[in-house]
Length: 122
Length: 417
Image 1 (tube, each protein chain N blue to C red):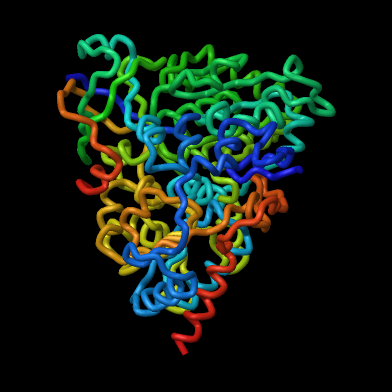
Image 2 (image 1 turned 30 degrees about the horizontal axis):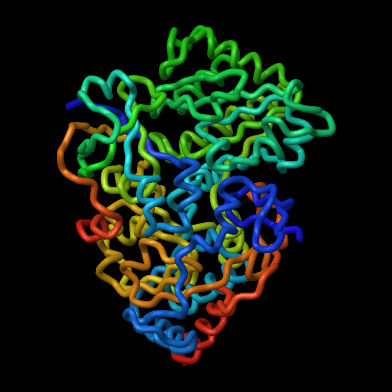
């Protein structure tokens, strides 16, 4: 298990599939987390492995990838998977904290839920 | 045939549409117009049953009129004409109007109320800006042609090309945009406010008050950056959600504007948000000229009140303060935090959208609509506030958002009488 600072954001793939949300293309565009190479190795992960992302606000299983990130920082594409774990508090602005949430990451054998299943468990 | 793209806030107006294919647009724009890949309904659905437009709108009007406090949310991906009807509908219903900026650039709106906005159009940035700072913004993925048309490699009148322009990226990640920049300043997450403030201290001559490192950036690099900003003749800070969605939110934007105000004592700088949806500016401008505010507007007392802590969609849903929702051109089920989606699952939701999305899965009524810029015409505000005319290039069996809302408003007015 490692602890990271999680940020979320737009990717080209997420944008290109955002108007076809119930397709497999969108599912794969948003259901992963990018980790720094050392962090990725410390969890003994290989490409295609799954991790559980846990924060104070929820937990979700996604695929793990290596990303060009500083150690201790993780990235998820914006969307329904990230939204299970981001901070819903808005500090009076209406805006949840989509970027900069403490998260624990651990390897898991659990599967990644589909978009429909995800909506059911919310 | 020339088309105007209705994906991101750049609203590229130089697209070409020929025999069902688009040319010149980016990956996002191309996907927008590749409608054969999209999942669309054949007809409106009420409780999963196909009905006519009139029947669906009648049912929607009943739900909205019978609700104590409906939430009317979305609006960033539709035309100005439809948004205007949405604001009037919210007023008639005594409901809440909120729009996608609420989970995007709304903190910037709060900062602008306090500080103002020293801005410039994309045209002035393209022609004049010799230094461009993308702060917490990644246009290479979010606005792929922004760089070619207006910023990174745009060919301007006074700033000729890429060689004559300095591009700086400030971000927590080495993004695709950072990889094409002349200077990349990597900061720790949540430290934007401290860095804006440190830059202001240096420019104010209080360099000694700045510690050796701020937010993961060495003092020497901050001094170098401050000097570049100060010695630029015309520069632009184009900020993204890295500033407005992280720790500090509206206060980060406020600090950024204060930095630009200070720079304008020495030289000329502008600051502008990189807006996401093609008409998210319209979703704020239109309620601003109809009701005085840009988002999180409550009409339950018969007059508009603005208070994001209470009337923004996420806060309203988290507290369970609405008993029905009309969602137009948006997908809150996918883009709101789980704590807000929970309530959306409990109340009747009416959706108006060209496409099936995650919100469709929980909606009671789904009304499919025409795609602006392809199947419908209207107007939209580009990210810099310039209004462009969206074109209709093909016929479709779908009603436009404007047609749907016009009939919905008429039926609501009749039922309320």
